Length: 242
Ligand code: OAD
Image (cartoon, rainbow, N blue to C red; front, side):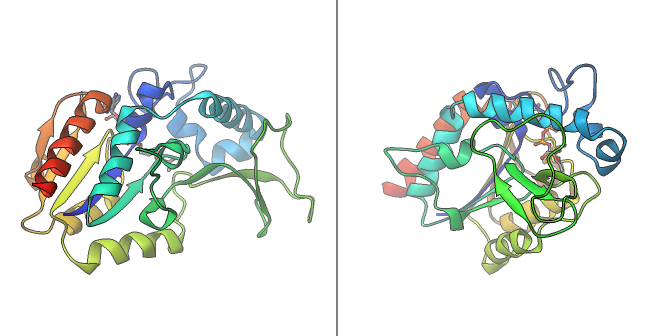
């Protein structure tokens, strides 16, 4: 069993983290897809930092749910496994199945890590494990503005993360590709999904509201991830063992 799992914001919805789009996506009447941009940061960096700090706080308090744990279980049970997540939270990293966690080299966080604070100008970055200060942080090396270590709309992806996903999906087709809780708003996600499934891979989409993979011929499980994904994983793992 060679598996690619692709996840989006909805997998953390049941852990209390708001999604970007759809119900509950707005923050103080502001559209997150407009806040996560360089232009929003240039016009009001304090506001953008407030939004990210509130999200950091929420994520620190959140715990992984059954869907995150199911991904960890699949990672343990598959012959070859890779998780491509668009989420900047750390719930996949913290989720375990019987004390097994997804190894770092089987996981790409393609939109970055919300707990990283990085200098806008240079290479300096740090992890914010505890709650950080107010205002716009300044780089201790150059004094320039610091920003969250996430990919904003219109920005390029980290080439090292891209290479890791490419290496996995191009090596050989997957027997199963599961796409969970995402609006699949980016062409590269569709591209990797298509490439990974190849002609014969089983393609499963889990989303209670939206269906995006119909053109690729995928199955649609119209349910929230926390009940649906453990069931799908249980079926796959049991079949692989039998
Ligand atoms: P979105 O907020 O666009 O979409 C969340 C999806 O999750 C929607 O299709 C919901 O129907 C679905 N959903 C909600 N609750 C769910 C549940 N309990 N179980 C399963 N599905 C559920 O989030 P993403 O698709 O992740 O990028 O957005 C992709 C990217 O756009 C994000 O990484 C971020 C964002 O703006 C950047 O910041 C570059």
